[in-house]
Image (cartoon, rainbow over all chains, first blue to last red; front, side):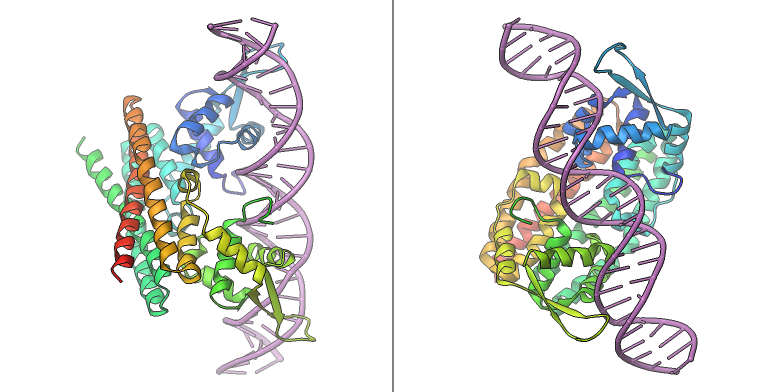
Length: 183
Length: 183
DNA sequence: TGAGACATGTAATCGGTTACATGATTCC
DNA sequence: GGAATCATGTAACCGATTACATGTCTCA
């Protein structure tokens, strides 16, 4: 895992949550159920197997609270390897592909960058994000024109929605950059 | 399929594309590769199996072009059942859950509503979408306050991004409603 | 002492990703 | 006749969903 393939968004979210403070599987599920992070699944059938995989790959370790119980409760913490892996993931440059296919995951990454890597990396990340989006916007604009020429009215409207969302995200990034710089 | 479970977003996209005009699998893939609809996979390993399933469920039928060939080329069209199924999916009311978990899919649906069901249904859909989003916004706002209280600075910023995106989508919907009404 | 929240998990199924394989057509 | 593009598919793998199962603690 993570050597040969990208982690799922859910695994990343779990690693990030655990990096803030050690928690149990149930705690993680509660966070997913009560915050927008729940966007990446709230199902125990996804969360517990994901924890199992992370543990098998030595990215997290579980401390068993109630011993001698048929229902062992575990508190998970990052291992050294887990922390390094997470940090390495968070310093990766933002790519064109990322903003097309994984924008939500990028925002998730930003959440953890502040805590683990500090302001400078947050700024680096936001600048790259804004740059990639601004680079992508003309492509969408062109696509709107194509849809209009094809008389695909709703299609053109739909792409406009995508465009508006990207613009909003770029503006958000620029605003947060200013706020972080003025601290 | 579709009797007992929701179709995947990819299946819906394929049905919608075919509803516009009969096309081959390759044509579909080209559309995915060259438009933002590609958000729902561009991989032949997803598209061809999806076509196969749709065909097995009699939602589409394929007309074989080159007969007696080892590589039969097929042009797919909706069956009566397929058209009815698609229409039925598109008249479903927009729910709270939809805008949290499937917003992109909702926009995709809007693309096809105009062609298949006309202006009135487009307006119905957009009104429901805007209403659900506006209902959801306060929840996000509250979550931002919670994150701030927890001193989770980047977390608060991240939720702000989600909020801004929802607001943008609601404004987009309201704007498109006005444009459709003034036609 | 029973209800409900806390807490952890498994099994069946399904669909997407990646990588691979292969045939058909076009054009130089 | 070779390269590129058109065109259709399969196989291994993986992770998410749904539904189910079960144990534990708290408090009225």
